[in-house]
Each structure stands twice: as C-alpha cells, then as structure tokens.
Length: 138
Image (cartoon, rainbow, N blue to C red; front, side, top):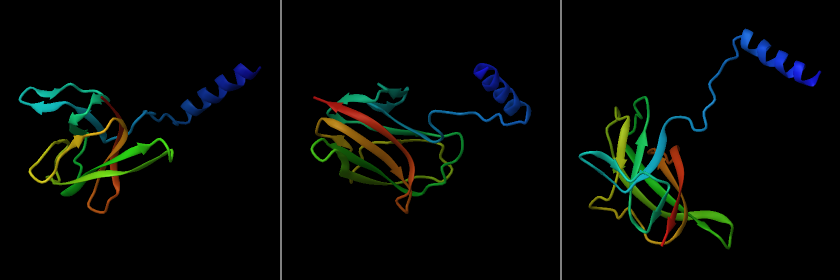
C-alpha cells in the first residue's frame, strides 16, 4: 500500500508539470587544477600537494563580474571551524563565462600549509558567486 501511494504521488507530480531538474551543484562551478596552459586545464582535482594552484570558474552564462576576489578559508581542527586565510583581488570582463585565476604580480596564490580549505569567488560586495572545498597534503 505504501509503495502504491509513493508511486501515485510521483506520477501525479509529473502530470502536473512539477518536473524540475535537481543538480548536486548549481551554476557557476568553481574547481581547481595544477595550471592552465595552451592545452587547457592540467591536473584537475580537489586534492593537491602544497604549492601554487589555479582556480577555475565555469558557467553557462556571463558572470557579470568586474572587480572580484578569490578567498581561502582554512579549517581549524582545534576550533572546528573555517577561518580566513588569504584573499586575492582580480579584475575580469563582465561577459566572461570561463575564467582561470592564478598567481599574478600582486598576489601569491599558494597553498602553503596542509589542510582543508573552503575557496570562494566573491563579487565586489563580497557576496559568494561560487565556492568549493579542497584538501592540501604534504
């Protein structure tokens, strides 16, 4: 009886047009690679050794950003919470849908210490556009 009710409820929802796609992560997507070169992304992962990395952001629509920043928050195992670690400022074009953020003259996009990090792409008002987690190991 219970299975019949669930099946009926699902079919009823489909008939009414309540057919929405459910995704694990909505747009835009933030992820990491070792570097971005002529052949595109090299070494995409969410686990790296200490050192320089490239932060990638991909979206199906223009991000409408000009002044933005990448912020790292590191997980403090003693306090059991994320704490501010570093922040890097960038200027991009508003029509960009695919952006790579890497080391530049004014900043050092380097993960120096092993641990878990929460990485954010922030707009000019420090509102989160995209975020992801990364693990850095020795």
